[in-house]
Image (cartoon, rainbow, N blue to C red; front, side, top):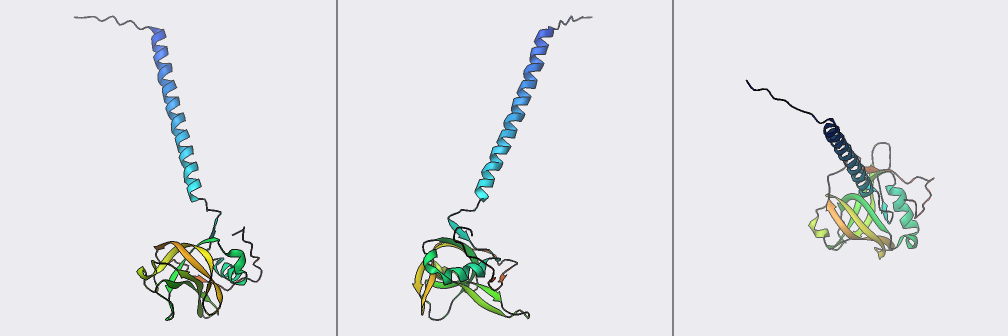
Length: 179
């Protein structure tokens, strides 16, 4: 029969336990710092670009009206919005209206509204297909002087659930720096 005599050095055990606890705390601190930093980065990725006017369903016709009413103020501004491709027979192959249907009566009668757009990629998209664009507002001519969006980026999207827009709000105050 063998008898083992194990001798524990209490100071070494305390040092080992202290080191393990310190490593665990450092690991949790680094993990928490990583999560916080990662969250800050993802929030900054979702922040809207202040140099680009974002048009949503709620402000679509207000911005459309403001740009048509005071075109010179908006020339050179970048704009981002979505709609469907709408063409008429006298457009060239690079032109289309990025349109939405504006409800004009209580029995859901609609009117097509939107910006005339110009893009070399226009022929790649069929009439009625939904796209999201980013472009720059320029001055163009279609029977009269109108805003034309020179498209920088265009991509196909699914038709949104809320695809209708409503007439401009008379209380809307257009301010270039606020939308």
